[in-house]
Image 1: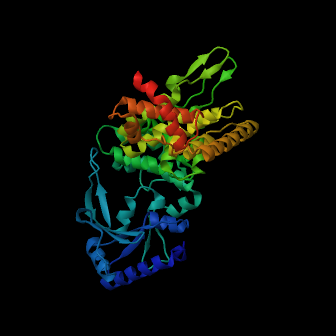
Image 2: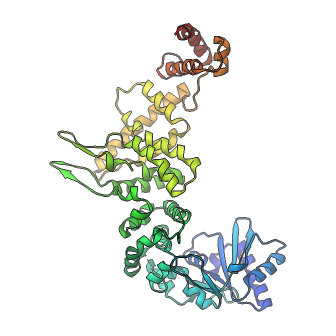
Length: 472
């Protein structure tokens, strides 16, 4: 197959042509390799270029950096790799190598070798493709990766058990590539993942939690995360890397009452929200919004299945999840709040709901109200199109009312118009609980609609209540 060099951006081609000329001058064989070749063949954007060098890649990278009047951004001599950045473009030079591993370590024993050996150590056939820079027409394909690209198959170049034993994270990477590319994992590779799933987190520390979490989030970033998440579930990997999500699966029925499988409902919500936003933490929230349904599930005669309190319990679980998965804690309050509030907006569809209830939701959600509404819209799922249409129509009404109240009362970024310092001055108070109590009473009066969200009205209200509060 002819390599579609024309698919590469012109400015990138110029850089690669210069490297090719330098490679010829130095009599060094240099190859485009791996994911970049795959993505050019698929006409997908990729700004990370891997170059495989038969010889000393670090020395060649230094020559290239001098040629472009640049300095190398990173050098790892032990691994024979170096990094050279051009604005958004990253080029990694690596010496062609063989790797071998002991069962309890991810630190490889490295031997520098040929392009053929280097390709054999790759994770999947679609990533085991190479193109020599000075002969860019021909694709080097020793493992039928081109056929697998054409047939949309994820398969390992060598025995998948050996490939997964060398780096167990490759089982999760298979799910990620299937999700990213909308490919299918071949049966032998999939069965090997099922058999070896516990190797991902077997207590040996071969795969760090950081790498597991990074790969998991990459699945969530794909256009249709349900593909990768379902593969994790069906291979048993989900039970190991995110047990709470795995526990969502299951349908029970009593008498005429049944509840839908929460796991597959959740996958649908994640796919829905992924069409609406690239915000990874909003997607993560969609994944965990019903995470506490299993322990709160209860059957009540005449009513059916209930999950009372699952939103509060789910919010409280997030801290232990973030800790275990080593997720960045700066995003914890966001996820906690959205999980805690995710049932509130749809409850406002009742015609008798007061503006006060809407103000309180706006106050509680604060700057996250728009993301909360996006989550709730994504949560509308049913196999009955009439039900979906009805729920969406109700939710349109909710959003309209919320927008009207916010425009009028400016609650989203609301704080008491009379601040604590002024309350202390007017009431002759030192910092104390009384200050907070008075401030809270002003806020409550605004949220209940007793007074408008304006400074003069709030100040007048403070003077009307302060004597009674201070006399207690």
